[in-house]
Amino acid sequence: MKAAICHAYGKPDALTIQDWPEPSAGEGEVVVRVRSAGVNYADLVVIAGQYQTKIDPPFVPGMEIAGEIASVGAGVNGWQVGDRVAALIDGGGYAEHVAVPAKRLFKIPDRLGFETAAGTFINYATSYGALHWRAGLSKGESVLVLGGAGGVGLAAIALARWAGARVIGAASSAERCALMSSLGAHETIDYGSASLRDRVLELTGKRGADVIIDPVGGEMGGLALRCIAWSGRIVTLGFPAGNVPTYPANILLVKNVAALGMYFGSYLQHAPDLVREAIAAIQEALVAGSLPAYRIEAVTLDKLSETLGEIQGRRFTGKAVVTF
Image (tube, rainbow, N blue to C red; front, side, top):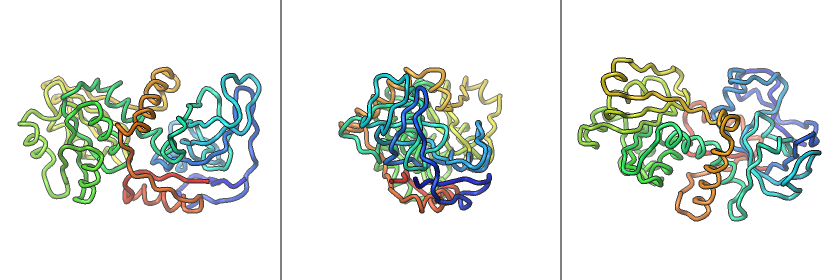
């Protein structure tokens, strides 16, 4: 089978497309015929050898897949060949087939396409968790989304609007602001030409944002804390901007602010039922059309390195998936 192989830790252009042994289903596993695989910033961290869990080279990266069950291993109940599934896995997704623990599988509704299923899984579930599990979002609260034109940011905007919040999206250009508006942002801020703090305070009547979702990191997270509401919550989801933001304890104290982290992968281990409920609700809303999906661009496997490079350079908006 064809797969993208990381032979040594490094940059995405080091990936090679070649034949790779086809997996078999072990105890408690199924083999999935991959139809689409989501392309994520986390893949860059994995390929660089800097992810929370390292995989020794050579290996196949890719952690977000959708497809059909091709074979079922011993000890697996409730799944059969032909079932349409999605999964978050440790690696192996950028291949035509991958072995997946059955406990990691999520059923895909018949009316949900593979590209949408793979392209929304991680970002929508992560944003849902950040808004509800971590920030405890209430209807009517204001939500500021940083890096709002990226995959996680656009998902957060759509989900916050769906939950009845007032949504302010922040990004670095007028074009990206238009994209955020299309996903439901009530207001947008081009922080390339306007003060983030001043505009947020202006839009919220000087109160500040109740919830701040930060999937970017760098100095923007620290700046955003200057326009948070009393008893607000800021949730950090990652640091593609490079630097890890710091939050002055005096601001946390004086404004009774909570600084929170969100790592979606750990919820699969510690609260799998919570994840299943969220995924089911998200997929149902996507199928019904009450929750919009962002733009998903399908690319072939040979374009994977190029696409990852665009994500690394923060030139890509929306979401990319590799299709097989």
